[in-house]
Image (tube, rainbow, N blue to C red; front, side, top):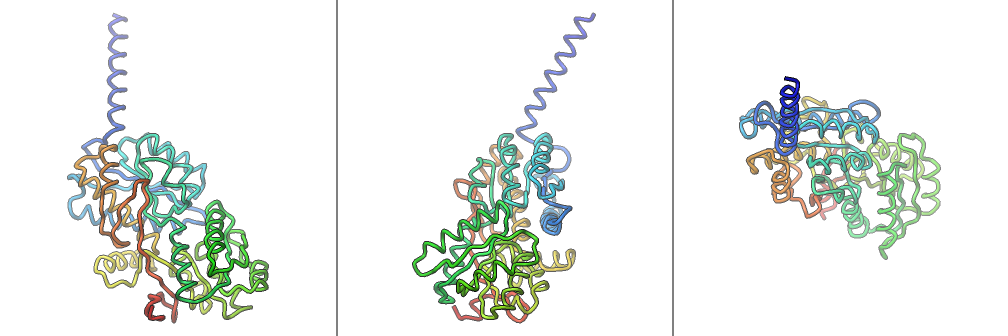
Length: 381
């Protein structure tokens, strides 16, 4: 009798293990289709995480109002990684242990995304980051995608602004001391330092969240900087512009797309006037799809969406469209479908290249009279 029971238990365990292996390929056809969202929901960067989750939920609601995908309702499963590599590593393990989750939107900082990405890739879970701009992120594996610009491409647009639009030559760089900021600052210094039409007069690294940039400003002003590029979010760019313009009202301040947010104007006030950005999303576009998203988001969040929030919205749309086109949630074939997709989103037509990078077209924006407007509307270029 004991032998029979033992044999029965072995059989049950074997069936369970086989079922578990099968579930790593495709989620159950019953119940909601789940997508993980992993961002900082608490801490200093919680505002970003909450904005990305809202943008993603708006897109999910649109799909659910039209019957979901493959006849299943879509559900977001939110995780708080606190913008910490350790938290992200732990969360990634939780996500890949859930066969009902088909993919991940996240994480926020490039460094945090790169800590979690190997776990997703090894377990064949698609990760799409709407914010990671580190050059090495998407090359981690076949299941790792980026719906954000590579930082070097943004600096290429800024290079064009400096040389062709503004006719300025002496450039200073102020970068935050994070893994992303240091890498981006190095790339900026390399690009501007090797352009014969530009002179890199200095590169200063500052603490993230610092309110005093006077020492960095003094060095760049003494070196004769005509333009300063802020490598950081609006929390760097707004006080940098205020403090720099207090000692040099003529300085041209230039930001990256991750600083494009209404909070920049609110924090920077008059000093924000004239700041220029390259962006892949323009909240004041007259495109009906953009207007619908902006109006819904603004009503919920209280301010207009940033380009990064718009990329979160599109990232969910891209993943769901891939599931629809694929006809199943099998992760290997879903990855192949994602590789071949062409998605007309509010941040432009998105296609991924061979390593999972999305190419972006940029609009140059400038702050004028307390609003973001197209630079071409001011300059005629």
